Image (cartoon, rainbow, N blue to C red; front, side, top):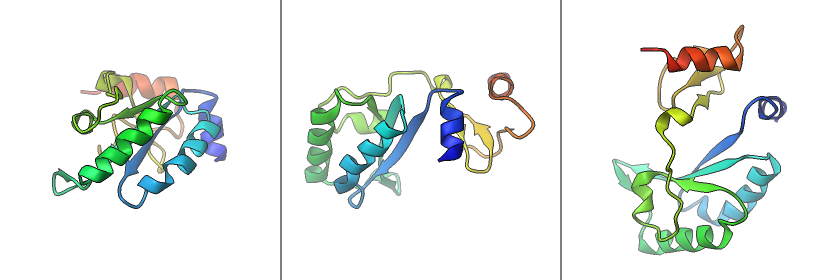
Length: 136
């Protein structure tokens, strides 16, 4: 939490959450955490297994209803692929280069799935972002 507080003072904080059958009932609690951290954006990522979403129709409806009832309280987004299952306007409309991921091991990456990245130790966020943007 100290690291999050430190980074929040430097750059806007966004939080990504994988949503599945187990975490769906915990979204109210997670929303409190996200708001408490002062996140400017919350990306809900419905779970994918073997290239397919794990939600059934009922679970998609539950998520859709939950997001629709709370979207005025906090800025929420979903992956573009998940948006077709929802009726609420929560598309990720920004360009991919508008986002970056800071890994638990201290690297700045384009997204959480990319290996490598720019080491933050011994660098500044500004320098690391510059290096990440200009990396081939």
